[in-house]
Length: 445
Image (cartoon, helix red, strand yellow):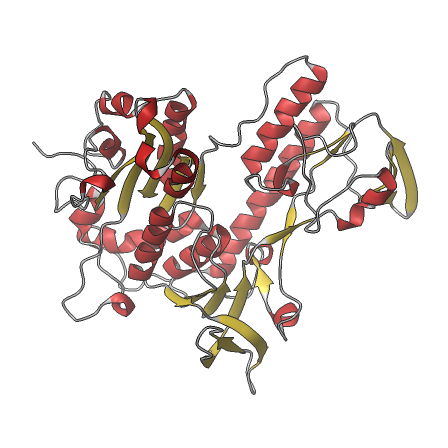
């Protein structure tokens, strides 16, 4: 769906670069959902084949503990039980829809639903400021659905603030309508229509507005899917939110382990769960010692203009090392391809008829520790293909690269990633870090 959104946004560029395209290309939502679901089924089949080929018995059933070494499940109407030396809990999470908002449970959907949602989205209200909220709002906006986002406070809590705000500004320029401070207080069917009447309130000001939407999508977080496991029968203790405090993935019961989104304070990312489980298996059965490093985890927020990060945010680096020991290099610019195609702001983001120029869509940022020879402890990039760019630079952080190492690399011109080889402006300097033209992320001449 992210890729489909990128294709939609590229139609503007194509016209400027010589392609003859219909004035208003149409998008078929049902065809997109059908393609997505076909791919999901293909993936699930591949996973099952992979398990069988590795002699893993896969039981598609809901399980729960009967004691610390026994698991029961029901299959085709028959209750069965297995005994085990070790248990790994990796149930992941489920999206939250609040119970205290009238109509939310009845009428709202979540990110789990949207990938198989046959009804055309139409005008959509996304509730939440998480990466899932922004990803869903981003691709719906590029598919030309009117999108509003109700945000309680800030975007992308836990991420670097400057990078998160950059994503917000780029999405605003792309036409997304942010409703900061507003949250739904009720959702109901509008009179004599299929639309939803949403009442939004700003708790700080007391302001209340009513508006009709076709779809309301909640993305306010996920809960750990552990309450149904009968943990008490095994003596396993979970926190109030259903997650586990672990030591090297071990719960309070020595032979019962947990990985993934159900670990308290750890990144809720599929590759993190996979790597953590692999390292745990090697420690248990292959006499290896390597443990998971949760600090240097590369990740990307797949908004239409992506945000990739690895390591510490500027705020976390200051907390750990102190403001005087942190040097931040930063640079903002416009992607070369966008410059050539004259990308424009969405009409809703313009302050006047002349305010059409799209703001810089790229932000490069390195967070360094001065006392450690400017070791790079935080990498942040907002821009196209941030996932691909971040994956490569994550290797540099993993092996302890310094700012001097970044400076010693010859850039590939004219790419966005080239900027990381030429950054000289620091926040501390007071100089402007916004390019006044140029060739994307690089230097011209």
